[in-house]
Length: 214
Ligand code: ATP
Ligand code: MG
Image 1 (cartoon, rainbow, N blue to C red):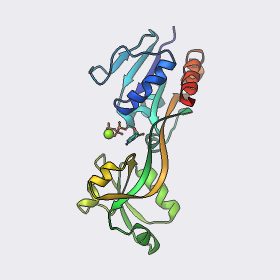
Image 2 (cartoon, protein in one colour):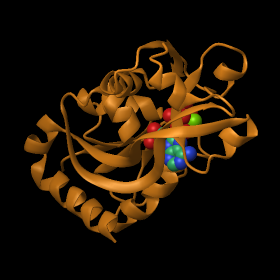
Image 3 (cartoon, rainbow, N blue to C red):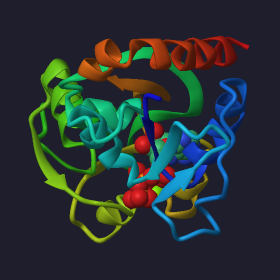
Image 4 (cartoon, rainbow, N blue to C red):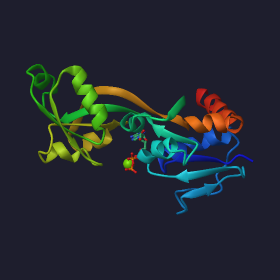
């Protein structure tokens, strides 16, 4: 029996993946939210789940420590996608990558006059590409979370972050001023595993594809 390992992160991605797993006939034997286990079995003896940080999913799959994984487009862009096959946009964990500024900061005027902008973000590759395409000079400041704070204390002029409702921005007197791209999560597959474990992986990929299209 060919063993299959699927890498997932806790929280929103796990919750939104459960129905897709069910469609593939995979039911986790426990919830990673209540269990502290990092390896979780399923109803299918040949399939196990590993629970990793969202930004680590591509790394586990790239190196073949997991055959499959589910990762946000934000995470995949920062990782680079090397060694990964990305067969299905699962249409889950949807949000938008946005530029946001303090309320009252005239972003369009700053761009027009060619100002150099200090940009705080976890998504430095995405931000670098976006501002380069616009011809805006930036100093990128890498953060690991709570980007909303940076403009409030003078660390940056603008932030690049994921926005869904805008509630966190609003609570911190910030406003989204530009969309960089829509974000959703994708199924990622190790390229070597896809060949070596094709007969086991292909039906799982197809079940995810069918469930995601509904
Ligand atoms: P950690 O919390 O471990 O530092 P993280 O913040 O990247 O990592 P999550 O907040 O669980 O982890 O986000 C996981 C993925 O969900 C992100 O990579 C992104 O694709 C998506 N996501 C993030 N924020 C939202 C949101 N507000 N609405 C919908 N999807 C989101
Ligand atoms: Mg988080």
